[in-house]
Image 1 (spheres, rainbow, N blue to C red):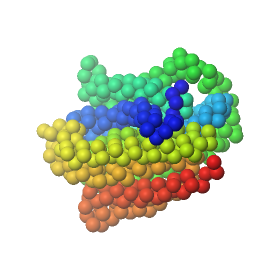
Image 2 (cartoon, rainbow, N blue to C red):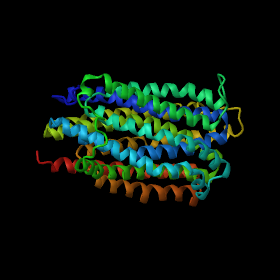
Image 3 (tube, one colour):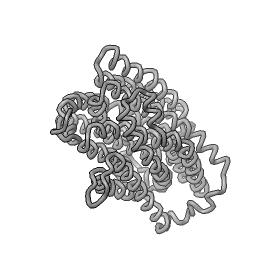
Image 4 (cartoon, rainbow, N blue to C red):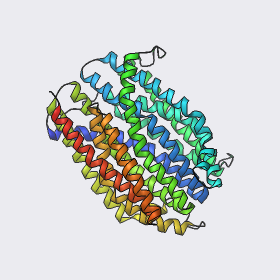
Length: 454
């Protein structure tokens, strides 16, 4: 199993980078599925692109919020490993699977009939119908996607991030030809349009899960845990621990991603062109966010291990390493965004299609807005990762709710519709909410660090 704690800062910097790299690669591969869908639907039609963005956002919200129980397993399982409690690690992962599956079952029917919800939210009937067509199929892909997240927590706790990368990469690769076949009707397949993108999503998540399950069977370290033996047996105390740590994570994720989802709904109020441009830049920003999320996942595991080993010095090294790597990454991303904004938007468009030039014009402006929030977006998620490593999830939940719901969302509405800045105003709210959250969460972590009793 890979070591995740170094003896000095230089070694810790390398260990954090090497531990984060497969997680980042996995996250980017995961996000590339959304990008692939958006890019190919953009070449199929503007209505399909707009509906795909809306439905894809709903899929992502459901998946990410439900992943709170899997994410809660990372610090708990890492701490158990740090303390040498292998039996406890196994039970934590099992109960995380229970909670994640229950969540999916509860939301299955509402998602299957999402068209009605979108119409009530004021979306155009054509867009709502297409989004509903997508989600009625894609909802079946949420179960394998969430099971992948549970297994990801297991592999992270064991210090085996490489399998996460390879499994997710294979899923992302199959998504490309699957989209090409079923959206456009190539290679003898039926032309299914937006429904084809939904089928491709199911295939991609299914392949990722299959690879991870196969690895569980052939890897010696994994086999010793007998992870799914007696899966039906409840461990109520541990289930309660995962739930108590996980539900605030889910609420925190709901607050953050809810801001972006509400922004997509508001962009739909502005018009289909604005929604398409907003969706392109949001997908691009979400792709980059996966890099920061990889650092955050590594920080959670490393901080949890340090807490289990009761080493303040190790925790300090982990903190400095992950913040350093995050800051350097932000600089690179901002340079890319401000250097090639038109190229980033054009990648999603058939420039000869109706409305493409207007989508491009609005999209370029939004790319600059996306560059402006990179610093806040990066440090708020890394701060959350560090706090989860300390099993601190309830106060971050409150911070997220205030920052995104009481600051970001109102600013988006006022700037977008009262002042009249449209999609640009909506993104002003994103920047405001993320900035407040980042500063507050970093102060929270600093305070928690000082209060540790070891």
